[in-house]
Image 1: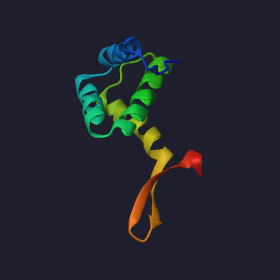
Image 2 (image 1 turned 60 degrees about the vertical axis):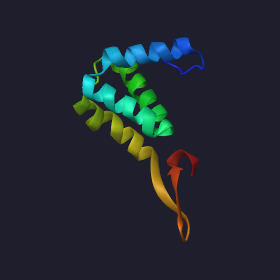
Image 3 (image 1 turned 180 degrees about the vertical axis):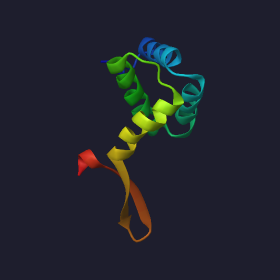
Image 4 (image 1 turned 180 degrees about the horizontal axis):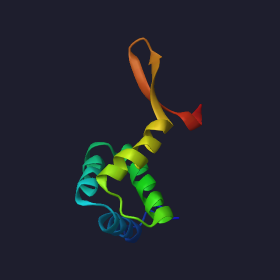
Length: 94
């Protein structure tokens, strides 16, 4: 299993794996997520890396939409905190 470490060597290795095992569109989505939503990017990146590690296959955008994204969406949902406030809840935390 690929694990996330705080050093730059691990980050560059993960980035290299993502570059080599994803198609261009999927890789661009991952890079965009890094800029827009860091926590979602980390979770989805780890799901993709684990998928690559298990299946030893290239992740196309179609595969990303059908197989990997649903894994992320099932884990979280929006809850109402109070009258005017909403938050993201993780199913594992409930």
